[in-house]
Length: 148
Image (cartoon, rainbow, N blue to C red; front, side, top):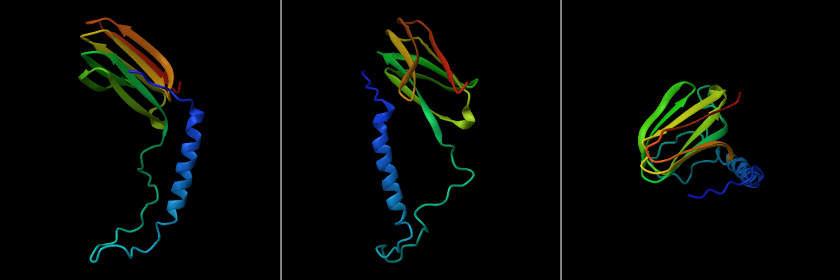
């Protein structure tokens, strides 16, 4: 599996276009619902103001990738708590949205019982952080942190 990582600057234009589109569409929220089918109830404005219980916005993403063939046992611990334990087919990926309430974020991914060679890698917003490799049947651990 080959991944092409793009520089962060390549996302600036699409992000700006999405922001402009969202701003343009937000003016349509108060338009009358004259096209609604007869008897349809109005659900109110198209968007509600953010509430205190809204999900925190992501500061970035940690992507964990395990490449290889066959299956392996995976165990993921985030900030000292096991959050995932499964047998998975390879290749395997998992994305962690890094939010203010998770900082500092520490993770540990254990890969064991692989039926083939395996490589585990961690990226933060597309930039490599760490990697580890092993042969069939070996146990490898990939660990790291962000926001220290």
